[in-house]
Length: 256
Image (cartoon, rainbow, N blue to C red; front, top):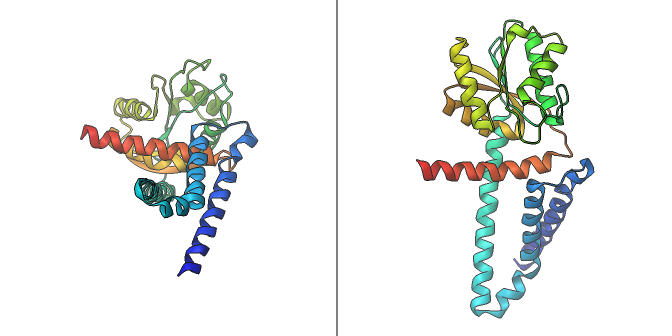
């Protein structure tokens, strides 16, 4: 039994070290945001517990009690993250029907035809669907942030038009400030234009579960269409989405 526990401890230490490297990958793209910081903190805490839990537990008294409490909370956090991860990855497996209205969720832009990598990948995926389904309209979403030169939806529209999509197929939602508003305001457009409730929702896989849940809350019947994610930036997005999902679930419980 002691040998088995030692094996588990060594395995856990290796996993934590791999996690530290994993969440450092965004640095290679010049980014190290909240998601990566969160991931690094989780891995460092796990490493500290694996290395020093035995020392504290042997001392007995209040130190042993605190050590066990921290380990318990940490394990519950890992179970919660595993549950959320299962939701994230399962939501990214859907295949949308043909000729449904497309809703492209907004992301950062730098100019009238300059987009972040995430948004460029979303627009690319939307363009592919629109080319293959010539009867499908498209709602591009996203307002103008304080650090953006123009609305996100306007940039998407310009790029789609430049790639041959008829402007009459494109509807612009340029008031929203977040994903929830993207979908609420897109629903208003869908109702005004009699586009129906079924839509193809375009975003990255890590974002798809929360996006589809918000789309359902807005009144849509969504089908996910997954856009590509930069592998080096995935750790940042993944960590951030775990935090966003947790915040969203807490808000649902509080407001229920």
